[in-house]
Length: 276
Image (cartoon, rainbow, N blue to C red):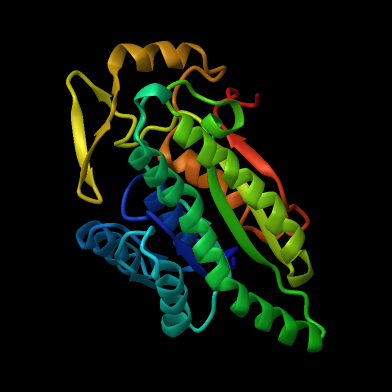
């Protein structure tokens, strides 16, 4: 039986850990060749090795997605290494929360830069390749679809107190998705979005004391108090947080040939919660 994504080339930002890693492993298991990205080299190379050990193909493009040259660099990595580009998953992100009266310009700019400007730059860098490839395919009488899956959140669909920066950025991702689905339809590029609810990752792990990770030189709090996780689970119709594998499955659906006539849509992956 042939694999669904055999021969496709995929860029996945923030794929050294968490949901991005899950997406990378899922797409690779279906035959896609993957460009892995993470802030740090070690986790990126670990995922590359994992994919290669399973018989797949992968390469790392390490660095901060907010760097001015990152979009061009990761697209070039895909083209130079694998000779093409078929799937883009804009996944990299984190939260830096505060109520609005205590939120600094730095907090606002950092989250908007990561979640909105960085995907914009990646997609802008990919456009010339998509244009030329679709033109050549049309001249040859072929209809070949490419896929963009932008990652949003139920904070973007419904808003979350203490996350005015993150909610604004993730809402903007949905607007960007809708606009590009109209711009790129003529190139046979499906542009869709997945809005995640509560998914079990290091950013949402249960903690009993304050835990931080380094992001761009800043100490950013991660984790959720265990009692709040239990309360949140009660509000989810399916009764629990989602797994990384389930989150990856939602992205995978929008990368399949079966989704070729789906574009400009936001799929909510939240266990029944978050469709505000």
